[in-house]
Structure formats: C-alpha cells, structure tokens
Image (cartoon, rainbow, N blue to C red):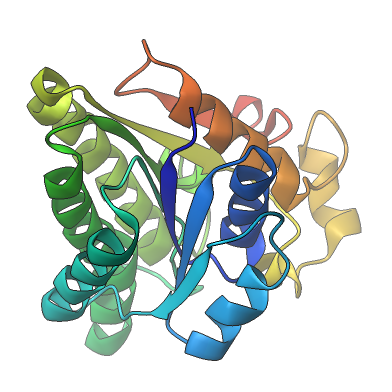
Length: 236
C-alpha cells in the first residue's frame, strides 16, 4: 500500500537516500530541508510523480506545524515520518553555550517537534516514525560529548514516545548509524577509522536507508534501536 512519507533532512546524506528509496517503493514523498532549492533538487531525482519539496527549520515549532498543515492539505495524512535532520559539533560537554543550544535544538528538540506534529496527522490511520540517531549515542566517543548526549537523549525520547502512541497504532523506532559516507564524515580519514570497524569499511547512505525502510514497514516492531555500523558498536 502506498503511503505518504515525510523526510526531514531529506535533501542530503541518509535522508536523501531514504527519500529516493521510498519513491522507488512507490510511496509519495515530501522532502523537507532548511533550503527550498536543496529540497526541490532531491525531489527532481525521485522516481514517480506528485512528490513535493518544502523548506522548514525544525527548531521552530510554528514552522514545523505550518509544514505539516501544508503537507496534509496537499497530500493527505502522513503515513511515514523520518527524522534525518541533524548537525555535528566535535566538542566536549563543557563547550560554548551556543554550540550546546544549536546541537540540542536541531538533533533533539527538532525531532521532538516533528514527532509530535507527525503523530497528530497519524492519529486516525496509524503510521510509523524512524528517528536517525548515532552509534555514539549508544556508546561514548572521545571529543563528541555534545553530539553523543543529543543522540542518547533522542534514543530515550524514541523509546518513550513508542509507548505513548502505540495504542494509536503508531510505531516509533530509531536507526543508529556508524561511519556512513555523508557530508558529516567527509573530512574524516577513512583509512584510519575503518580499522575499528569489523566489516572494514564505511557504509553508504543507501545501506542505512534500507534499515530505515525495514523499520517503517515492519508492523510488529516498535521502540527498537537498530545499529547500522558494520559492527562498530562491538569494538567501542
């Protein structure tokens, strides 16, 4: 059955791969990005028709609410929601307050706002939500305290929300990627880091996207955190 999939952070990295995979599976997709042109550029790569691209700052509640109103008015109720919008700061927990606010507003509060708005659209027909976390949110990593804490908090929120909305047939899960080849990891030395990965390589965005799609389409899985990291969590 075709559904409407809404992908925040859908113009790059894992979010872009998820958008493309949803379209290939025959779903209608709303690609959401901070930048309208970037969102539309991804829409232009999608198979099928009637997809849409919108600009939204996920840290602003009114923008999030307005975005969902536009989507539901144009396309109908949301069936799938994916939260892939995120930022990275290579910083300790005792960092500048501005860094802390930026990371938590985007990585945690942004996903909370979209989940609340998305679940309202799903309340009649049910649906599925997948939040994109990180393996460092499940384990610690040097010099990544802010990012780790924001993703660990997202894990807690994901599992708590899963219990709250299950009675409405809404499932909430999380994918925790490791080293995936995206803009966020572009400056890393792959040869250096892959030594820590049992599979011996970085992952591609589409490999994480397949895990997202699996959780979206699995009707009896909720509150689950799936690591997609080539076994990195085994060595941390």
